Length: 571
Image (cartoon, rainbow, N blue to C red):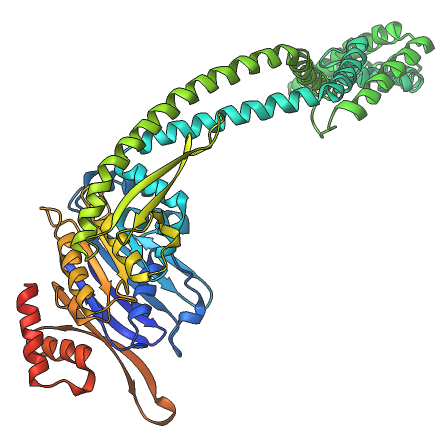
């Protein structure tokens, strides 16, 4: 239920606050006063119409549209809670705020920013808008099927059928692609098998690249290692006046001096320990030199192995810094093995796909039969209901039925048949498709009849009719006004609310709340600006407005008396 709609700085609207009632809310006003702008603002709030910077009121930096909704239906509450990923309870209020600035348009729900898709999804749970051109919706056969399916309460079955139909066609497409790609599949398999064999022949081991690189570095520098370690050994031990020999002399000298000064004992011991450590190091260096072997054949073998790894790396690895190229090559080998297994198994896949296609076909046939039976049953039930509604709307001779046409053995995404609403408006004439009815007034009444029938199962609480009175006269306006009032009060809990823009006093007389929209020019000179205002009319003000709608500026006391009688009849 929409409780309040507040609009500020939008086009010619400076600041308007609408308080809506349960039941039927009618908006009246002269052409151009801003009735459609208010509906447009409502659609912008719900993400159903673009909210561009061109809608900003001149001189304003921000336009704002705010809608306050009350939630009652548990299913709607759960749907909205799922969309918003928020906890919402029945009885809670939902506050939608859209801000429009020169740079962007944004929307928030209960203070949380939401995406355009989210607010549109929420809006579809709250509001159902029928505009002047909504008859075109009713004329499309695909939409007529949606209307009948909704009446038949077979949305879940239709969803299952559509999913199965899509699954079957996906399977057929995959099988066709698989069958058509046998040559390409063979070529791809040959390539993967060649790559796998090339990698396998190399007999790679993770970590060997690092080991080989280190060994290659050592082998290419072995002569330098031999020379420099030899020189180091000679300097330490194997030469006249070697470092160790000279340190031994120092130890001997300090040892003699210890008898003269005990403070020399500690430095002497430190030098003695250092000498022993150097002697041990010289011994280790000597053993290292004994192990050095320079084999030119080994260097060639290491280089050949590294060349193999580098060649495979350039083909099969991404050569990332800090990553073992052999590990990357072996990882690629695992990947192509999966591709090889998949390609080799595709012949078996063809047989499997054939079975899956047959299974889907059987399931589709069963679901299609169930869906068709539900539609046929619903068509029989909706026929007298529509005809009763049309009789109440002044079309007592109208006859309505749903015509089904099979679509062939394979069916369609919507089922085993197409359908069309057929109607005969005058006795003696054949029934014709609704799309061939020229009268806009008749289409308006048919749409209202269908909406009235679906109202009991309609979870959407706010219905909006934009000039449903197009192309109809006063007598029919009274009938439509009564029907709108009845539709608005069709639920015992008052969960239906109708917003209706009308030019007919016969419809406005049935309003539970009458809102009058005017446009005024305020200011002087360059400061002159047009402003739209909204007033809730009651008592004599409402009588005067309805009288002017009926007779224009020529309204008389007699006209006002007629209006009072009209209001009394509508109450």
